[in-house]
Image 1 (cartoon, rainbow, N blue to C red):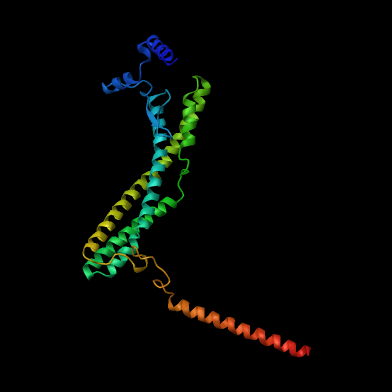
Image 2: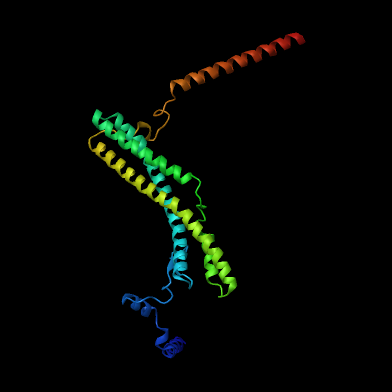
Length: 267
């Protein structure tokens, strides 16, 4: 049975001929300086990382189609990078560690560490503020809806209907690209500046560690899980608790006195 299946497969392969060969031919053409069929009009990655070709259209429309895809992806990438940088910097406790190192350093080194911390705090605040600000384009959708409208209009059959739809879709996507490009570029700059400040902070802390300067606050020192003995309640908290305990005792005595008084009156 297996031999029969193999023979049938061999016959089909021979009948298919060279026209159904694998994708080696397009790749060879591209390597030789040619263009891969279906890609001469521009390409863009889809949500799964695959590459899809732009619809047939004028060079200006194909370029707008490409930019519409690109600006949305750029928005998503820059905002995701901002979240990663913020989370990593917070997880490393860089601001607290720089303050600890500055407090334990000689005067000149303390000033340098303070300047590094100030720069990091400034870049951090700028990054967070830009990320959380109101963007002129929905940061979740980007220009995806306008791009879909434009893509669909480019694929319509030629005629008056296509010209009308394509004109409206073109204006919609161009406006979205113009609006989205500004905050995306600003987020890119803010991420770059925050990355530099994070690298500078890590470098300064590494140098302080090499000199034996403490770089971790006592309550968050590595391997020192703070417990009741490591983090005693501050004196103000103790005084407050003692005051509340005295008030509870006083209320209990008054309640007992009222109960005794009522019992005597009933007798």
